[in-house]
Image (cartoon, rainbow, N blue to C red; front, side, top):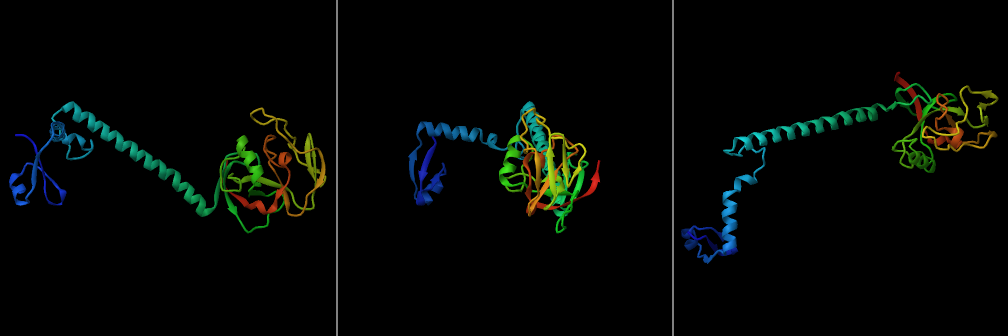
Length: 249
């Protein structure tokens, strides 16, 4: 029977139910040939529009059913792995923020390990601290790969360095050593190039006094540690806290 369209009250479209059409005083028009083809295609393949993992999906093709079952199982495993991965990343980060923990993987200033950031403590000389570098300096560190992204000015992470000099101290920077108040630090030679063999700019050689409100941060465990030998003093206000070891290796 030829498919028919009926436009009833409220401009609604009704199917081939003629009784319903008479009850609603609908106007009957013949569907154009291309529309009849689309209607037949839609009716014949309606089930194929269902999601492959839907429980109501039915097919008599055993191979197709098996393939869809495998696809569905693989999708669920991928989704589960993704969720577990997010949880694995989020939980340590949340715990770290809650207890103010910091994981230090470099041993340039102190042994690698997990440290707790203690704020409200006046940092002293030779103490390991977390400090934010000035924004311009931080951007240089990010561009060169010395720093990772973080929440400090300039979008960088805080550095973990040892306080080498405080306001009023006298510091000497020479090619083979660094001294504070006349005391030389071992393994404090200034490197000419970084680990990528790029030229490593450094301070001019000579003696200088630490100004009020400034601090010099060092990491003498590694001659290529990017520290005050290369960028000089930083504001004491940038020190966020003292780092106390929780677990080191």
